[in-house]
Image (cartoon, rainbow, N blue to C red):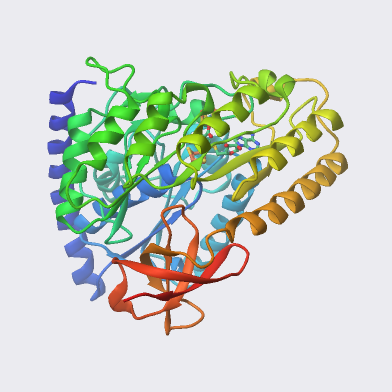
Length: 473
Ligand code: SAH
Ligand code: SF4
Ligand code: F3S
């Protein structure tokens, strides 16, 4: 990455922000009201973080945030394409939004961005069948939103700008945070792993690490702004920093982040088992600020399937990592992702997955039915598993994961543990909800004034996946 160039680009975008702000003001005068935007986010934490950046730019150009998409003047869908059903959902929503535009607000402009727009076939579909869409862009040029909005306001027709890849990381653009007390922080972009089922490397491009000094100065600024918890984001955080001019390991970065004054909790996502070092385990064990939660995607418990998935670890190696983690950090909670029905998966392979689930005893697991993605190696693999067989395995796995999760998550009943309060409870406004270091939810009596603070709470009762507690004062 060329830093000087990135700074120039940020300045260029600042100029566009000013230009579009002027257009926004004119429109406001004409309509006699403020303009409003709605960003709808699908997919993972990366997309959530991108949406904060997009929202930051939209606010700078003079738009207010609007919760209901039907009421907004600019609706932006930030899409995910990791499984096919995510795409189908988007097309349904676009159709609905078109009817709202026609009925209620002809001024409404609709944009679509994110991972799905990195697929040429999807862009073609939008171009041909969804002509009411005004703006299309991808994952590599979100920093250009002000410039693209300018073009949308001044040119005719659908604006489409999708880049195939990029080396560039543009720092110092505005962003708005969804929460005042916690924030995701990108430490790297892209992925080089090419797991054979996965489309992410194609839509997010090659792995690029941010400079440690940029990450740390962002986190220091967040801490000064009252943020207590940061989540370091990357598709494979364990390979952070390897390609930097002065390589820095993820463990070292974690150590430095945890040392930032004011930061009380550090999380990270996602950690690939193949690159998980003993140094990382040691840093977690040494440092109470690093949360007692480890998300360690398994994908399959069968070494044969893992090889076909291009995951670079075996069942035994995975179980060994879990053993070492628990030895060093006994109270850590472990969660995972599992795919059922990968091509060629036999009943024996599936039972290996069940065996790992029973041995590890996860706090929770995201279970997915394998979805064939265009352009991935698995798309062409023989022996795609019949739907009814996959469904049956999926149901058995889900039941087991839930049964174990319920048993495991209650293990801290009776203890007093710190809870970072996130919100007033939606069902009962006399309660607040927050999370333990290990990410388990806790509800207890309290008021909004507690939001963003860390409160010692006695865990009175386990309700399966969450606790009811009492604040201890
Ligand atoms: N980088 C992360 C995962 C990102 S995608 C990692 O390596 O763990 C999140 C999850 O989606 C994956 O862990 C996987 O379980 C699931 N997933 C990815 N591609 C999929 C596909 N084609 N079908 C079903 N699930 C998939
Ligand atoms: Fe996809 Fe594998 Fe990269 Fe995760 S590590 S994003 S599953 S290719
Ligand atoms: Fe989806 Fe893109 Fe994340 S495909 S899972 S939003 S990186």
